[in-house]
Length: 97
Image (spheres, rainbow, N blue to C red):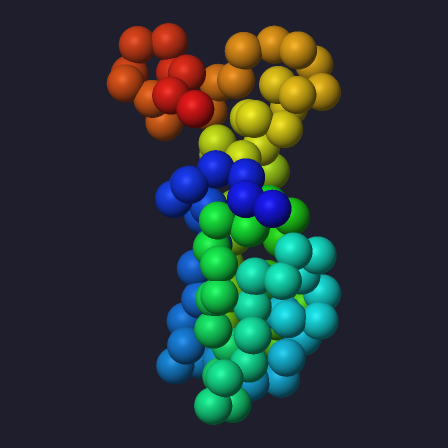
């Protein structure tokens, strides 16, 4: 499942990663895989920005702005039926999703 293309706020600092695998274990959409004893982002567009990976990383190698951005705006619009507004658009209405 992909949410939106190229909008996830997910960031991985590979140098800091210790390869524990917790991110891969807790991610509900299989965004991560451990390769050569380091986490790798397999498919950034699967990220729903829940923040489970960042909350469980013991060395803070992951960062994600959970509940913000386009993914959150789209999900909110699905639930409420309102137009999505993520403030990343053209600067006019804020709807760029």
